[in-house]
Image (tube, rainbow, N blue to C red; front, side):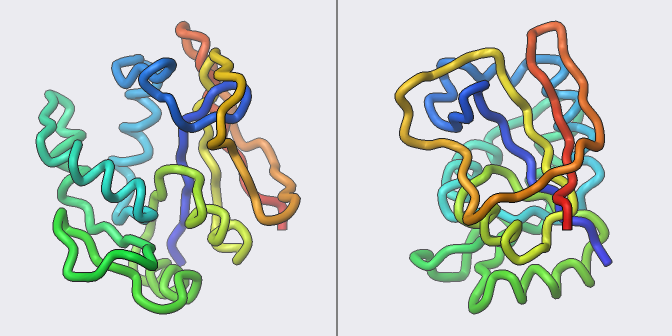
Length: 178
């Protein structure tokens, strides 16, 4: 059975938005962590907002590492109640029950990565379908922001690994306690 990993970046106060103020995609630590996760993935799960943002950004990207080419080539599965298929950027719309679809995808792929922590991630955690959560915690506090880390109920986590980078970013990997 395949592994599902949720990966996201946030500020110390749990904020996801206003990334232009605090996120540096060229940070060497962030790049190493992203490379390890994405080059090891067989498929990607995205919510609608992440899909719409990434499909505008990634197809135009190139890099010496081959990251963009690999990410663009991965099959993507998109959870949305408002989009209709067919989707572009090597993406398939998840129709019907998201949790049931992800259970089937786990039988098809060895490693599935989901970027962001919105409604899709909360649904996967609630359904017990997440094996690991990778959080990049940036040394910045936004303050009064609307988009923050949320879960449908309390979720216990077990620390798997933690790294810190020269930039002050902490990369923490957790597994949900079942």
